[in-house]
Length: 249
Image 1 (tube, helix red, strand yellow):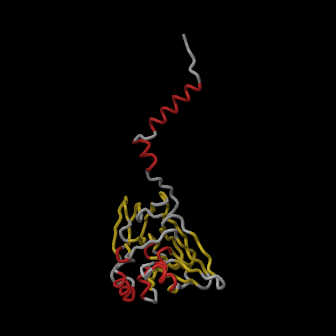
Image 2 (tube, one colour; image 1 turned 135 degrees about the vertical axis):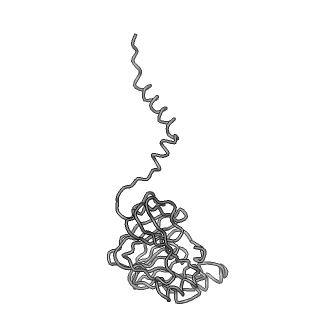
Image 3 (tube, helix red, strand yellow; image 1 turned 30 degrees about the vertical axis):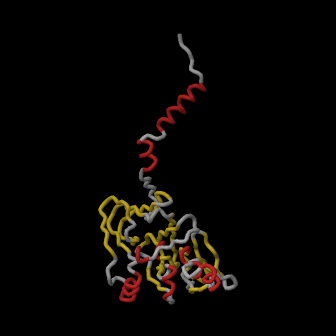
């Protein structure tokens, strides 16, 4: 005697089977495997993991590699590769902007303390990136370590930044989602140095001391030291004060 199974009961069985497999090792491996999207040199495995499809050379932030496959070589930036001026800046900054040259052919996975990663493609453009927030960039981009004119900027953790110029890909990091603020002659922008991620290459921030903040909140307040951006351009900030001295990088 043949008895048909109720369709609703069949659906319940399917849901039960799916629930039992939801946490299986097989499903975990499928969900987290390398996607290999073939989207170019830089691609995002996730919001917080950069996959570099290496076939040549790139610069990465020292210590950012978490895994790699293939024939890959890592070489810390040469002590004189950027000239004596940058060597002096590095000595003062405690190597906070140290880079690693990655060469060969393979896949290199990079991350930085779980920060969110954004990929930018510069087209004969220039940006300045906080040294803590630069993850990787192409060799086709010229770079130069920039130093704030006022040494007191060191107290704000923002003494050094890196200027990138030319055409090529760059990966930056931020805590959570950044926002971009336009800068015009009629509307300057003031930021917390510890929350400042990058700005357009034609801008040069000035260090601004807010006496009222210093008086009200005490000498240790980061908000008593601010970046003032004037002119034409933009500045990108994150919703987080990254109080990390660069000599710990």
